[in-house]
Length: 146
Image (cartoon, rainbow, N blue to C red):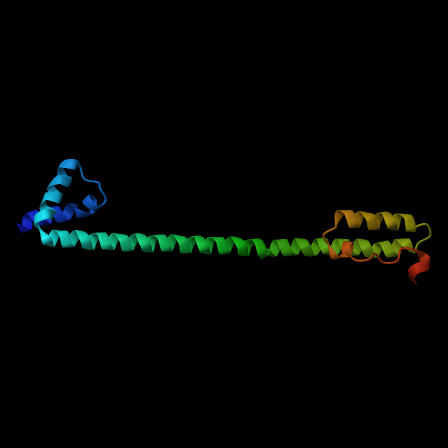
């Protein structure tokens, strides 16, 4: 085979391997490959390289997807600083309201209002520690504040 013909065929091998050549060009390349061992070796090397590149690509994509999934899981578990501050404020408000029920209950006639406040905190701040803990004594007899 002439070097010129081999160079022309080798320039088309990638497209031929991908099935992107027109029928006439593909026929010329195939005819040349039947008679030229050097170009056949070049085509096989190209196919091995492409197969390796595809494998690396698939593994890279799979690895990237695993990293993305781990990042999503981490975001779901780890609270942002803003979320933490919001939770602290919410816990603080609930604790202050529950503490104020004790003061309110110690006042003459304050037991009923204190009980309403305990119910409010239990309902509106149900996710807080203050709402989940046993309420402080709300009657003057149980734990009067001096």
